Length: 221
Image 1 (spheres, one colour):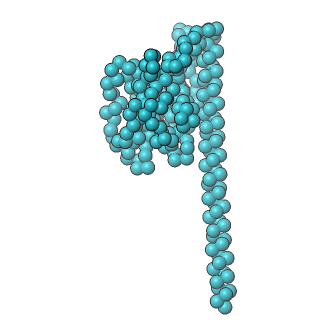
Image 2 (tube, one colour):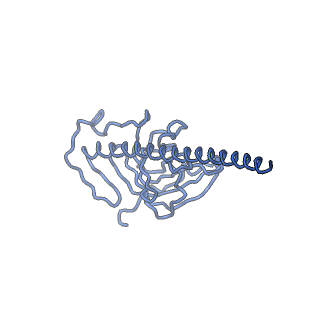
Image 3 (spheres, rainbow, N blue to C red):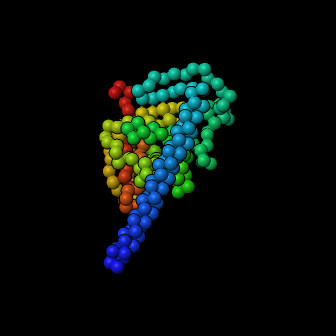
């Protein structure tokens, strides 16, 4: 009698364990698929952005030489001074963000909202590659997407930003810290006439933020 009861309990435990395992594998599989698919689509958008602009002009600041070749104005907008802006998932792309250390390549959208940050990263303050500070925000989805891996970056790591004018600038990280979500003082910080960017994402505690400052690399470095 005792053996039968024990056997039933053991069977129930095994069934529950099997269900938990299957559900866990399903969640893990979906997370991997979501990460792969999101990064694949974002990567394709980045490649398309680069290809579209490289057909027209190349103007890179950082550790890459300046070149202007085979200018084709057919894809320029308005007064032919700027390339027509592309869209991604219904949002306007202002540029692309690349961080080699964490294998990050995402469109930079023209705004940082709940909706836009579900598909890429977005600008919350400033203008890409202009003198002053530009704040780029992204979700910490804890699954490798968007800004989930910003905590793996260190001072001295390079960050690359390419804007709609095909200007690619290399920034070097020089400050990393945590602060409250209400702290916005760094938005308008004095950059001493330099181009700077700030990368911002939430931490485990959503009331806290990880903030990373990066400054344009000097040409003689």
